Length: 177
Image (tube, rainbow, N blue to C red):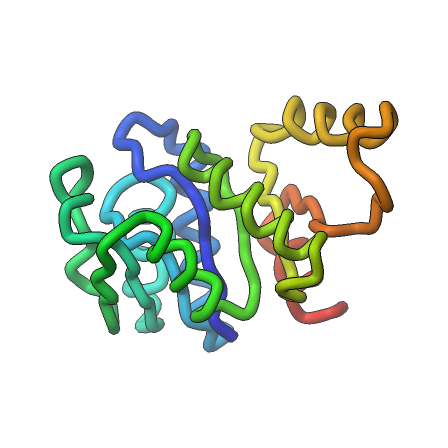
């Protein structure tokens, strides 16, 4: 299965988050899954990719070449797809992925997350979407989404995504256990 990881590329992230991302990458590789990600060599993306590569797994990095002006790109990817824009990058994430994991991140991660849950809500994709809520990082966002539903701003509150607080829980969702 190709699993897309959305997450920050920041170098300032506490190890509690990047250690989990590394372990996630190790288990992805051990289970024979391929990581699809934004190609960054730092932060959540870089830690997960390092776990994949240290466990002899495969990865597909997707990014515009100019992104290297902001963060270093991972040189160990099995495949790297260069695109012209962030929009093209997101389209490639969708076309190359069977499932999505949203790990802690910033504005870019939220942009990617809200786009894929919107597409799932509109039945344009049917992929599994899992929010990896490490150390309750996304609690306030999840509360806001719940409140939006309670106040009628979201209709047909189907389960569009799942929330996991552990790596084991992620794979329970992905493997249907």
